[in-house]
Length: 440
Image (cartoon, rainbow, N blue to C red; front, side, top):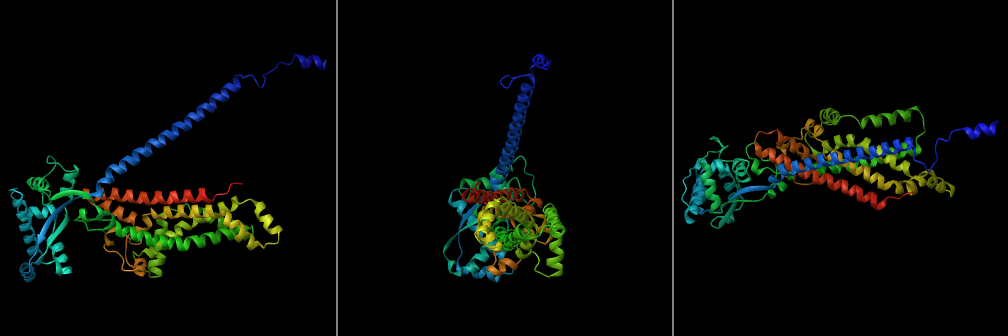
């Protein structure tokens, strides 16, 4: 009876037979793979769009229209200019006369007045006077001045400004473009690589052509030194204690929960904390990279602690057991065996935390590290930490908030430089992991 019932039971399928349920399962797997591929392609598409937008808007910031004029100032002209009440105006008149003479030498006759030169180049008298006061030995010898053109003239060379869009104003007149074309034909105005953008400082709201990000890069460098010197030892020490030595009780659980919560706190909260504690309570210098580094250290510590603990957990327990088995103490086991094996992950997490801190803006704005204070390089290492300065993201924010289109262009160029630093740091993190990683 039992054998007959077993023989009459229907056979639902075999392992080698593809039934309806198997076909349905395989189709679902193919659809999931297709969804994943589509998601990757969409992500790559938006990444390419973002990269193209940044490069198209930011690359013009690396070129600048400059007026090159050879100017010889005699001792008599220098003494006469210094004896006048409006000294810079006297130097401007001498410069305009030299410029007009060069045009006449090339056979180009174009009408222009001092107001047109001021609209094209800004105030040139102060620059020329400062040069000869600092270099009195150059009086009487030919000196070639490379003066940055105004934002609108520079935009005319880059296609941002056209004759159809120019409206007569105190910044530029339509008739000024005839002078610009004549200077360009004479080779006096040329477009060249703008090294000042990389090495210069903020130039104020009226001179986008002279604005540079170099001083802000130095400010970010000093801030990163503070973050690295504080966050790495504190974060690694806290991680080692929590992972290897701390007892498992309610107190350590509370600490771990709060560390995870701190990693999700908005960065502006750390800025308010830094303003209240480091500036208002401890009276540390405002806008100093030291204060910015302390604020970013507080923000970076949770990230480093979490990544370091994950690296320590990835070391197999057999390493600890083997070290303890041959007589090593708990501390010797951690520092001689576990920590060296977890070092690649620790370094990777630290570099990623530094890269995150490098791009933060909100905390720096709250402690006063805005762009217009970054006017000069620090005089030494100590002044680099305590003197007022700015940082790359704060400088970019300041430029983007200004009305002139030239500053908006410089903001995009600053984003390119910031992204180069971030990509470099992430590449270093990948190389370190590939170089030292051990697979178990």
